[in-house]
Amino acid sequence: MKTKPEKTSNIELRDRVQRQFEWDPEVMSTEVGVAAEDGVITLTGMVRSYSEKLAAERSAERVFGVKAIANDLMVHPFMKVTDSDIALNATKALAARVNVPKDKVKVVVKDGLVHLRGTVDWKYQKDAAAAAVAHLFGIKDVYNEITVQPLVSNTDVGEEIKAAFRRNADVDARRITVTSYDSTVDLWGNVHTWTEKREAERAAWAAPGVTDVHSHLRITP
Image 1 (cartoon, helix red, strand yellow):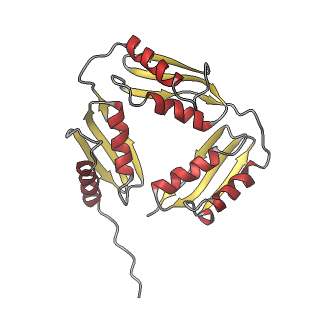
Image 2 (image 1 turned 60 degrees about the vertical axis):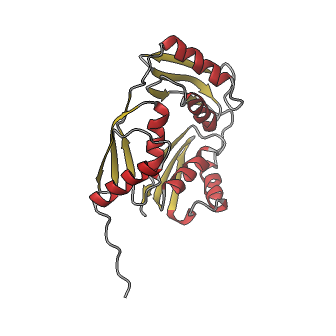
């Protein structure tokens, strides 16, 4: 008789995440606190860069049993960088990325917080803009306020996304339901891993005409 696997305890999951941080060379701070409750991981404490804050989140996502992450890490750079310098470096970083449309993304910096604003045609361009500035020294957080306004419209966007799921080896299309209204897409269902969740969301955003994706996907290891 097949028995149902035991639920991972909060303490065990917390310890797994902490050991993952010790293993991951991108997470250098020893001041990262981890709390776990019913698969939800909360990260608290201090790191020295925004890049490390993102690295800690990615590292926690890799741990089996993690269903959601609340990243409350605070960034305290060990050297002061002026907002003017950050804005200049961010502008140069955006200009150097071929997948960020020229003259469509603006940068506003206040107290080390970077705000990205503007309009692009595709979600991947919005993500590329955030990635371009994520590793700059001195920033505390990045707020990606870029709007996606596609040039094309596709009334069959839901069917296009379903077909993309069926072609994708990393997505179990049978477990995901797609609903769409105008250019907004909602994803419903269960996935096994963070990787599958991200891939499903990426595939939905890749459909022509999509301006917003609401992901209601739940991770059920």
